[in-house]
Length: 450
Image (cartoon, rainbow, N blue to C red; front, side):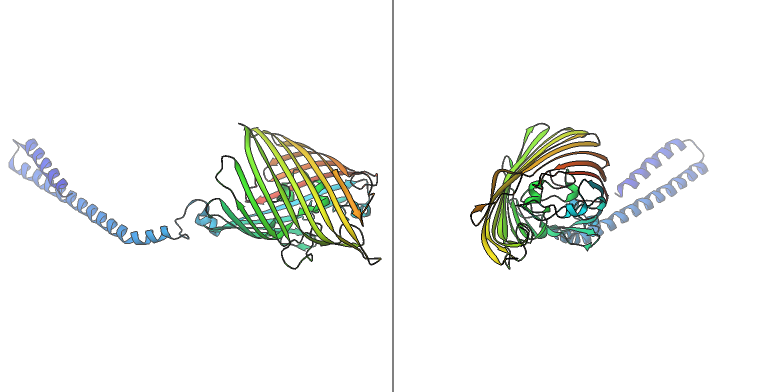
């Protein structure tokens, strides 16, 4: 580095000497003095540059051990991407409001007592006029964030006029090998596609009829337990899953059916592309466990075992962002056996059930609009309901037809107009329902599944 100013000085000196050749001696001396001063300033600047570079190199050597330890630490602030520092300290928080106007040809008292004989004594949640929440939850608070490079944490806290509930709070592993993942806490079971969704994700205002009949108006709901999934490296997407649940759903199981965990599920989900713009998603499932509840037959308690088998299929066609079609269907089959205690007569008799149900729906998207239709029915193939071996005549086959129109001004707003022609009461009467629903969301929300 020191050769640079020396060579520069020699070149400058030679140039001045040549240019000054033939001049008077005083002028030549002045030119030489000016050249020496220029060389001195250049040498000083170069020396300052050299000193600064040496100082920077010394700092880098001192920082190398610290940087190495940070790179080895899983909690380093240098970690980038999904586990970046800003995400670790600032979780995604969103608030969702669900409100709707409801009208029916039935009175509020008739709606409250309109169950499905042979399936559930639970009536309708909605009342004529203004309501909050499709599942009686007017607002929902969602919180999501990575805990560290090994776990994510999710929480869903619904609000209603009666108070606050903790529907979901669970941790999910993110770094297990070989495609394994573990979930633990309180969560919505993934035994079926529709059960895993929150009400604001539904393609319709209300849940499909088989779900209302077998697990309740909001599905299985949040269950305490653990889930293990395995996604092996196969040419086709295939997910295997097992769940151990406390079994607190009031319709299918019951919190007092057994002191410990008494509900279990196993399922397989698979998908493959049917074309460049379409995908088919499908899979079987089974949910089973001990049951003790009083929601099947009025004024009775049931104590026994239940098994719910399912098969689901979803086909999505998406040629562009502004256009798409979704065809979706699920079939559910329930077997149940045990003892039915009559609370008024204090008698006990056996109960055997083999019942089924299905729904089929289609949703067509055109820009910000969505047009949807659904048909759901119970007792498609199985309608066994025996008390002490005697088949019960429960009335007409329950079914319902639905149509809806949706407008989505943005991804944070949904406006839905829906009509139901509901014949699930078995009494020959129709429940003609009209719903105008508004869903608004603010904040960052974790992505929904396919």
